[in-house]
Length: 355
Ligand SMILES: Nc1nc2c(ncn2[C@@H]2O[C@H](COP(=O)(O)OP(=O)(O)O)[C@@H](O)[C@H]2O)c(=O)[nH]1
Ligand SMILES: [Mg+2]
Image (tube, rainbow, N blue to C red; front, side):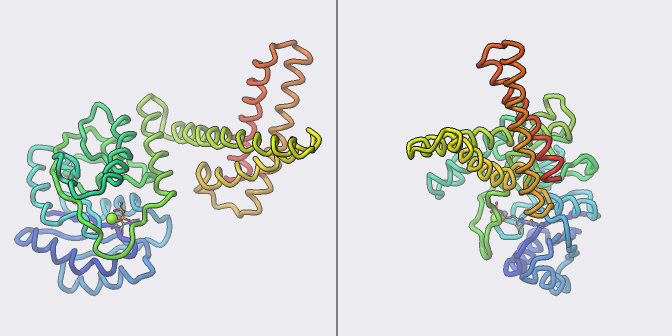
């Protein structure tokens, strides 16, 4: 049996055509569609239930822990088939290609639909779109090396159920294919397909998905280098925190210089710069580093503020100890003191403000 998993969020208008085309493609074969919906407000699940009179569709509605990868994993757990197909519901993945994917499974573990296997397949795309799509795949290609993959970001693929272990899959990333390939040693085949335009509704790709993708790639990289998965994620968060902090130094400098130019005393200028950078760091860490936090805004802000005051105090104390008492070379002492402040800020923010 073939199980076709399709994750959905607000895809009501695409379902009828999708089911019809999948049915045509798999006509004389034993198959099921598992539609895993994240409680879409547009009535996707109701529409799918209605259509299940005419097509072999099972509908699963997930009320919490929303996410594309989690939805695919749910489908995987429920699938009865020994061959699994994963595809989007918006008709960007052509159902007519399913038989070719399945056919490849006789000689391999996974068949990946690729937009870029043959050079000219996205000829009609604008140059900017081509560059963005190809560029986005580069980090994934690097961490997956030496795996040979022309389209590691693809969401259209088929695999033999026995070849993949769903237990180890970490559902955090938006790109479940990367996770499957990272956690399992698979023989891969690629099948060229041409990526259609979305028929109806909107893409859900936004800043949160881009951040999640980069985090996912980072955690795969550290995991491949030998850290455990939780350690890898932690390190990714620390790197994000550091990156935000580095931009915060720029914000600090701009405010400081502007205040000095306007004849403020340097201590006032320093205070304003510290407060300004703190807002900046809070905003971006909330958006990027700790975007999964469920604490209230007030809680996050209060503790972030206090932790940063503490970090600043540690920085000053370390400067005093290293330079004043131990006579350490000043630039080196400064770096060490920054590092001390950073550790307190990072762990304090993680444990007190956002966890
Ligand atoms: N269950 C579930 N499905 C999602 C979620 N986000 C996107 N999808 C579905 O995943 C597929 C691909 O999403 P889409 O926004 O078209 O991504 P794009 O093609 O990269 O722009 C579509 O079938 C969406 O309905 C989500 O958070 N949960
Ligand atoms: Mg799409």
